[in-house]
Amino acid sequence: MSNYNSLSTQRSADFALWIQNEGLIDLGFSGSKLTWVKEGSVNPLKGTRLDRALCNVDWKLRFPDVTVTHLPRISSDHAPILLQNKGGRKRSNISPFIFQAAWLTHPDFRTVVRHLWREDQSLETNTNNLAEGLKSWNKTVFGNIHTQKRILMFRLAGVQRCMANGFHGGLGKLEKKL
View 1 (spheres, rainbow, N blue to C red):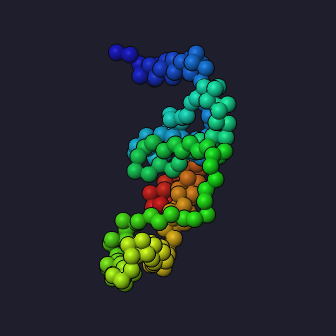
View 2: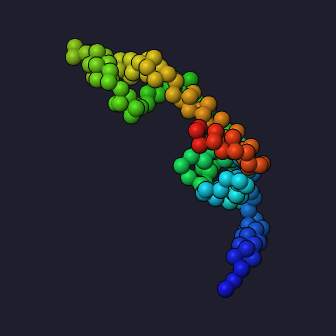
View 3: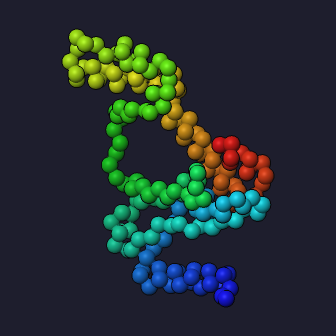
């Protein structure tokens, strides 16, 4: 029977050698240094930077402004990795209409739609009125869920970054709560 730790160390060395032989570059990251945390580990937290983004020199020269962010872990023991091309297209100031499934859970949703949809108007006019009306209703009833989510994600990322440097019981409870 082989020793798991020595086998794991050998696999890591083999992988590092493969990366070097292929001429790959680790793109680095921002965010928590841990991309995987052993499920159920609490004190001390067991994890590592298992997931990473690699590329070759040609790709890096073609996309020099790419950044890698380790996003907070949610419902998984792995952190999602976000690659962004900061040199890409600029975003428009016009926010697109995005239907939110959560609206269907609100008791007033059907009434709001009936109020906004006018039979004497064209399909295009009704669609535009409905989109604008629902955006406004969303802000009033639900608040800015995107801002709320962004704040929660920043808090969760901060907690996970701190925990990657050393476990603290209060932070573990806060992570679960967030």
